[in-house]
View (cartoon, rainbow, N blue to C red):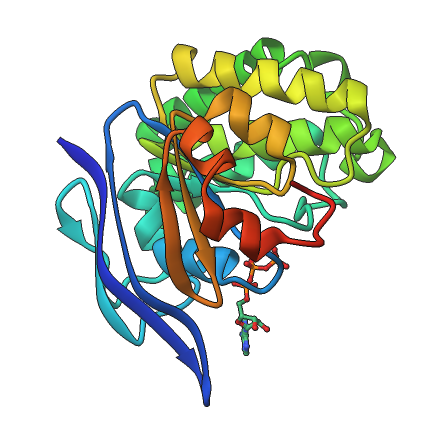
Length: 255
Ligand SMILES: Nc1ncnc2c1ncn2[C@@H]1O[C@H](COP(=O)(O)OP(=O)(O)OP(=O)(O)O)[C@@H](O)[C@H]1O
């Protein structure tokens, strides 16, 4: 079954056509990429999938459910989690709390529950705490549980953002430039981490990345957009040699 189905998606900002007639289907378990030069419309696509922007036209289905009109937390509830191009962590909370708090959206309990500290509330709090520790352990972040994110090395912050996204047990994980700002050693570690997460969590992944090595090594399929239009789609090898892609990137050092 398709985890993500996007049909004829479009987005305009005033007179600017940021995304036009964008179509994409991801079957469960795929690891696919979305690339394109700066300003091509990649993050706008992510913002529409995750409910941050409403599309100007078109349709997005998550596990066959139409996301139209849903706010980001309602899209999360359908099984979608994301990371951001510019890391967005809660810097005044510990690493552990960053993971715990994001799960509240997913496990959800009413105000009455929390006020009365019901059995259900206590049970869920325990589950949240245990899963947060499990995730930190699995991603090699356990030693940082009590640290504030801003005190961590940049590469570790990126990892934490991915751990936080995983905490909601997503079916679809959107990674927006996870290698941005990483040194070459961290990039290698990221490639290993994403591959491992993909297998261990059986999650479908769609990823934006300018780092072509990362995309070529990880993705089974890549879609290329430029000025909001799809210009190519295929395996990494097909994309690498595609004339329209080479032309779109001409003069760009990233490819
Ligand atoms: N909220 C907004 N309001 C107005 N214009 C926007 C908005 N968000 C994005 N845009 C514009 O839409 C176009 C696509 O932007 P987007 O951020 O999706 O590109 P991108 O492919 O992710 O670029 P980059 O690789 O540089 O991150 C750009 O021209 C951008 O300026």
